[in-house]
Length: 266
Image (cartoon, rainbow, N blue to C red; front, side):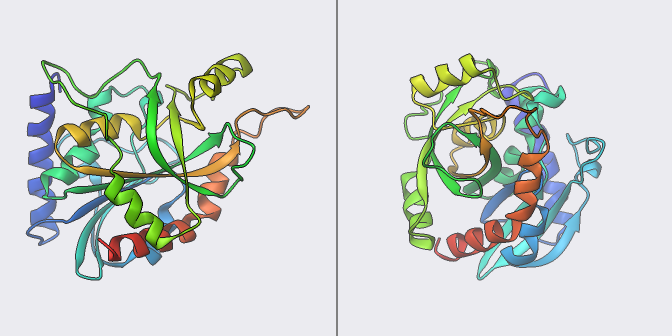
C-alpha cells in the first residue's frame, strides 16, 4: 500500500470478505481492543462470528506472543465489528498498515470508531486502572496514515457527541490529551517533561494514526485509554515493562462493560 487511495481499496476488499464470511450486511460500529483487552469481548455483547484477520486482504500474521481475531458482536440492536489486538507502529509496520483495521471497519459501513489502549499518565490525579477519554492529541510519531494530497481537519477529531454519550454511560470518566510517541520505549524524563509542558496528560504509542484515518473517512471517533502506569516513573529500580499489558488484562472486563453501556446508548 503506497497511497491513501490504495489503502482504501485494500480495506474495501477486506471488508467485503468480512461481510461475506460473517453473513452480515453492514456494521454500525468498529471497536479496536488493544493488547490485553481480549476478555472484553465476553462482556461487550453477544458474539455470533469470528474470523482470523491474517486470512484477510492487507492483514498479516500476528506478532509473536500476541493473539489477533475479528468478531461480529451484537450489542442490543447494534451490529459491532470488534478487532482483538492491533498492529503497532513500533513493530516496524508503516502507518498505512497500522490504520488498516480501522479503514476496513469503516468500509463495512461503520460510522463509529472506538479505540482502546493502555497508557502512562503524566498527571498525578489520574490513577492506574482509570479509563480516560481522549479529547485531543499531540502526534510526535512523525508519521501519518495519509499519503497524497489529503487535507483533513482534525479540529474535532475526537467526537464531542460520542464523549457526551460515554459520560452518560459512566459519569466518573475524565478526559485528557494523548501524547503519541513512536515507542516502544515510553520516553526519557526530559521527553516526558516536554510532553507535559506541551499539554499532554497521557503518553502512549497507539490510537492517533487510526484516529486520523477514521476522520479522513468521515467516521466519528471515541478513544478510551486506561492508565497503566505513572509515566514519570521515580522508583529506584528498573521500570516494569510488562505492567501496561498486565493492567489491560486486569481491566479488560470492566472495559467491555463500559463499552457495552456506551454502545447501547448510541
